[in-house]
View 1 (cartoon, rainbow, N blue to C red):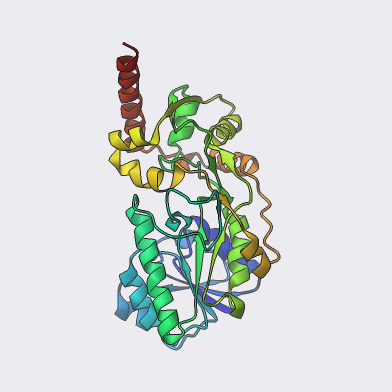
View 2: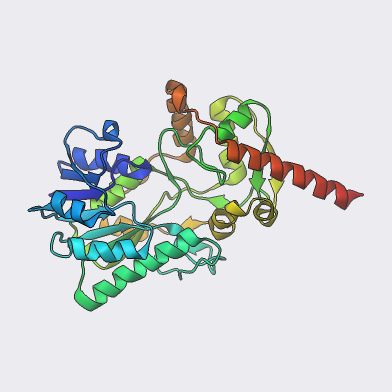
Length: 335
């Protein structure tokens, strides 16, 4: 099987690259080659900027693929360009969308692939919906062989999940320093974290699968944890107790508008996913890494790579601003 990843060195795609190589897939990466150190042996890198059509045409000359996976498209215009690039070059085009596309607030607590789409709070989600619709239209009009995949908060080593950014050490640093951390809502809403290695089993299992054409799948863990539970697990992995301060999501969004989308359009709601569809199509998909284990391994990895313990000063300042404003609001309410 010959497969092309557009991207291939990101949070989720790195684990999927490993899984593909282990599955004896002939794998190509199409990217600018800026993270070649993250590309394992066995991958052929085609160097081109996906936004530069002429470069991509040259890089793809003479090549055809059983599957193409688009990891880095966020605009419907990008999908429209891909339709022209890959219409005659692949038997399957897999678009990595997002589970944030489901309508908020949710009409039912358990999410299936047929749960209505619509997210008025988050531009990122709205654009992913627009991308999906371009593909669906192409499928109806010309039979374009698409598959849509929707991950939900997938993480790997070095990631510490938080609405204030999961790629940095900021929340962990605050917990270790004994500083208060902002927890949205009452901390009891349920959230689903999916380890990238588990996601990879589902994604790679869909490649070159005729039954997946024209279909949509979310690929998530079956486990859900409260946000209080997530932060407690992070604290346990760090050997410290988090000092959690519960602040309403609406208040956080007022103080830090840049966080409104991911909160009011996603993380403020309990999410429970029905994964029966992906399990029917990929029987090997059985998530094996629970959040407590995954978070512990992520922090152990960071301890072994201290240079990756980066602090996001903007997120740090945001938490302090929210805490200050919340104290003032609570004092005013009590006076």
